[in-house]
Image (tube, rainbow, N blue to C red):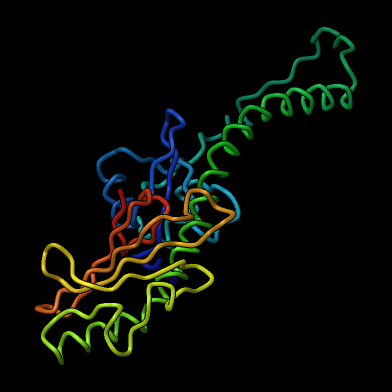
Length: 238
């Protein structure tokens, strides 16, 4: 059985047609247990083409959903007694005309629903693209993070751009990063500040990523002034 990556980001639409997310699979399960979700709520994650009812992805999320009740039994055929005095059936619309009316009516009814889903899906897709670009930027900073941690261990202080082996802020620029400043944060931790480069994306261009290194635990912490929905799960936003 395939299970979902616990770091996968999910979204769902509530009964009032309001979107919620980003959420982890664990949070999604908790909201189901709290009654905030039902088997028919629409959900979406990165990689899915369109929104789907929650029960269709239950196996991925390891959900225990209540079974759908079986249909009511049909009347016993033996209790039906045909009559020969049934009135003549009036001629109605041809079947093709009824089908055409139904198709037109259904199409008109679907237009506002599709519009609502598109209004929700497009911003989510834009956030997905933003997170993808931020992830690429973070990946490009990984070698520099290693150098900063090694410098702190060897010299018992934080590296700066002027130290040997480190260049000016523009030295570590990449297709996704305009410049990187290396130094010491107010909390005493070493780290870096990277300015994002995204000329075609106003929501990203010029925004900052702060990578904070805690030498006591040898762990990195990511913060940003971007909105949380535009950041991968390991980075905390505004």
